[in-house]
Length: 167
Image (cartoon, rainbow, N blue to C red; front, top):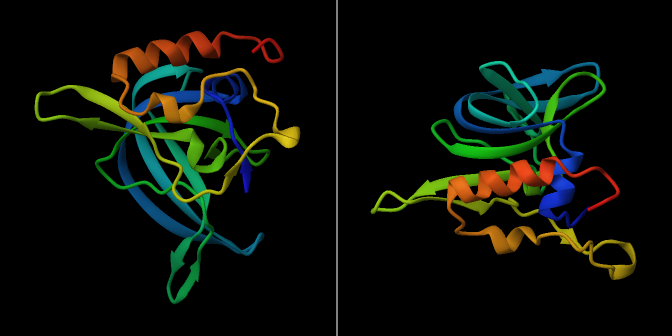
């Protein structure tokens, strides 16, 4: 379970927000933590918040190494060739992860007519309302489905400028 985030909460709580293309993925076993990690290299097309290099490696727990599989519901998964907008935070050990599990990943698609839009990609996460059921007053991520990419990026940039506690 993960609390439902608004666009404004995702944007202000993220250290880095990028529009990019997934180049490759690979899994690795972390013997120190006994966790399998799936790493995805994302070529940065546009930085909406932060100053990334030309590519960023996003790491999420789960995956398969040899004959061992570790599956965690709600973790975002990435496929080479996917175009995405990612809301990322950096862990204390330096890994980049999607904020709010799959809520931090938006898939970019293109229609036959060439219109590029975004859609949330929660990937099976059980998203729950905030404690007490109080609405955040922000933009519900589900309302963004089908929004034109450039309009979405403008909204994200504006939301990223909000100070924590004022959204």
